[in-house]
Image 1 (cartoon, protein in one colour):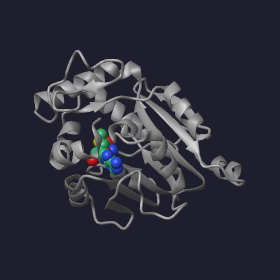
Image 2 (cartoon, rainbow, N blue to C red):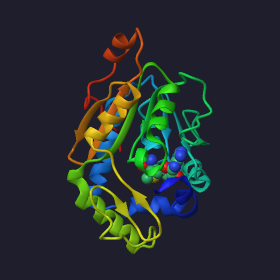
Image 3 (cartoon, rainbow, N blue to C red):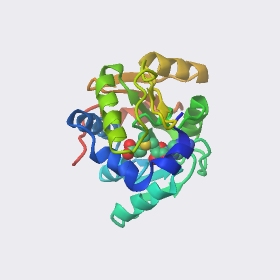
Length: 247
Ligand SMILES: C[S@@+](CC[C@H](N)C(=O)[O-])C[C@H]1O[C@@H](n2cnc3c(N)ncnc32)[C@H](O)[C@@H]1O
């Protein structure tokens, strides 16, 4: 597993930022499409939590579109960089917190995001992660999770090869890396969730999740926190693709 320790010790702050700076063009396209899809599901009035926010790459973009964003991460160096490069605004906060042990009361946020394959990269119990995300989501709010589409595998592999070349992660183990799992020789390991994996996860928890593929690069699972008022509230949400993220 990649996990919190791996990121905190080996891939945080400037090193994490560098991974995104060297992303090949097709990967940049995927990263943009992922943000655009998430923004498309948010409302301007939403208070949003991002799990595993890193140096704030996604949170800063989302903050331009909604009322408030809180990003949490377990890597101190990434949070420091996030605060340093963000403009001072009371609409964006970064806090040190574990995604499976959030220090927020029940129902604090309208939307909780766990993007860029956080569900696999954190290396945590995935049921616990989703339940904790739902706990801090308001009734009628949404949890948005994303992982990699298998169609994107060659591009994902090429991106990790580029990261390894720069010494950001260990050499990619080309024999062990397969079936959606990237394995590097320094202990990095991250899989992905297929649409069926997401459906099975939701079914184990006893919730409904809407799964879709975005741009042949990511798989999104959207869970609406059930409530009597769920229909009225979700009706106000823009349909996918109706809003677009500013660059
Ligand atoms: C693949 S990086 C993605 C960073 C950011 N979401 C982005 O896309 O730019 C995964 C992030 O999750 C963080 N992380 C790992 N385990 C975590 C946990 N249990 N709780 C919160 N954050 C965690 C890592 O420190 C790292 O910043």
